[in-house]
Image (cartoon, rainbow, N blue to C red; front, side, top):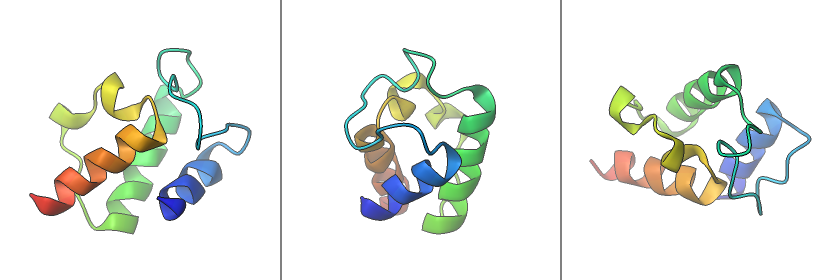
Length: 75
């Protein structure tokens, strides 16, 4: 999880990713941020995030992102 928080902070350093649960709902992350995050996660975790996983519920918090990464790693 710490690695994920670091990746997110590298993309957008003024957000409390450890505690925020409304990253999409509150417009904290824009579409460019999301594309950067997807690219970084694909590289860091050796996964491929399919379009079907690119939904607000998976990007609203670091915890949700981490759960998605784990699901994709186990697939």
